[in-house]
Length: 286
View 1 (tube, rainbow, N blue to C red):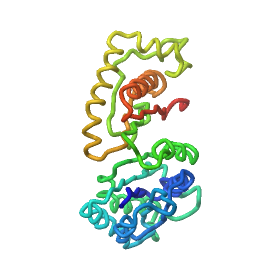
View 2: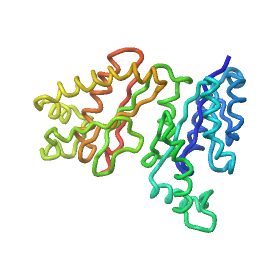
View 3: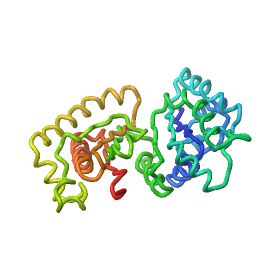
View 4: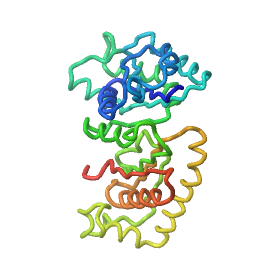
């Protein structure tokens, strides 16, 4: 009997090695840098040693083998094999910083600059990126935070039901690239302009009470949660098991944080098929 396989890929420098090690720590059997043409054979063998879940890392180190990834994925689809494609990404600026800090060249830069190698890799990965089931933006994640994110998503082995990451962010720092849904809560009066609330965050009762004390905010959250809940069966039918809802306000400190906490709380109260957890990208960034 075949087992679901996790295919881990993405931009060089985005944290594939860290993610692979985190999966190993969670009990997954990880094969690094496998030629994509061998994916169907690996999946057909079923679970890994001792019944472990399979994960495969595919990246540009495979040279021309990497170009076969699309064909390998098509072969899995035709055979009816279950797999999930995870794509790790980060901004070009962050990738450059990481390569410079390690003093290592980008695999595709040749005699050119690091940014040239990154551009070539993005072009190669464009089609694969559009097919991914789970996208993880590691721009603002350190090693330990990425390990934690992997644990939150895959800590239970094979993903059951749907896991929803409700992520607060500040628009002035950019919309998270791994967003599936984006919710703008800048229509809510900003606690930043209340002197005693300015140094606090949406994690404190004072700010949360201020946010939800505004007319229509409670109804807004309840209606949005109901909308997401109505979408879950469709996502499940299409095989999507992980969803990122990004909730934004200006700085990602007050409104979006309070709203994120409440959305996650209400989603968890709906049914067992939904597992939601809040994360806050920009709290403490100011």
